[in-house]
Image (cartoon, rainbow, N blue to C red; front, side):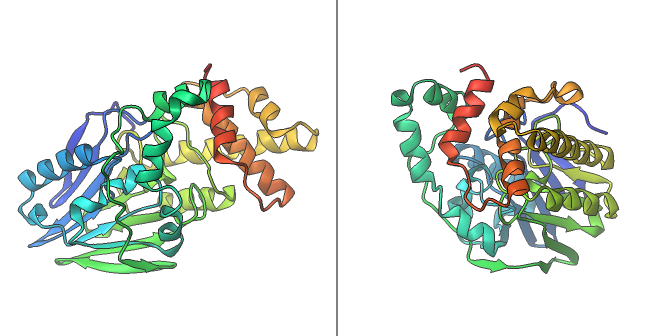
Length: 314
């Protein structure tokens, strides 16, 4: 049930909504709302204050309980899922402990500084502007979680049970799924990219594959990814198959002695080449090589961005 994106607010069930970005590329993230009675829970904020403010206005118009957000869940540490936190700073903000630590490493202020200096970075700067130039990072106040957990956490929103399940490290260090059984809905954060290439900043890949299998086993009819259109179990299977395909392709090249970037350039993406941002293969192979070798030191993120810029033609 993967379809084209219709941006904006989508009712999923009584008191359950998805907010969809216009497309699923860099920074254009989805979010969600669960409400019951006079209580509300927001899943993720967006990359800047203008985008988050527009989303909150539409949610408050559609759902009276959203006039005051009681709880915010940040599914992971990437800024396109938490930079808007200050607009709901009165809520209890919950994330995994690993995500809370990771959030402090690339704050909105740091992102603003990178963009301000991008003109000095040549092709890399052009790629940064291509990916992130549509967003406004100036003036955002870093607003971290007020509560953290490890493993699982069960919450209630009115009479609805909401289950938080930590499945990271995978995409990032502390990815969390948000499952509302009463609505038969799961919000996956960036465990799912639909029609968009997943990017594995952290790994191990087995954790991500197992997270997909967990979603496939859930009692959920509607699945809201971190990027892309609302999907169902078939969309989850597609992401899992991509991860397995890249793992196997990278392993063969690792065993043959090819370096990570050469391997990324050599892999023929075939059926996955139509997904947006295919250059993310450079990050994915690098993470897999680190996993295969047992290397603990991660490649510098600017070097990874340079590799993606080169693959994307910058």
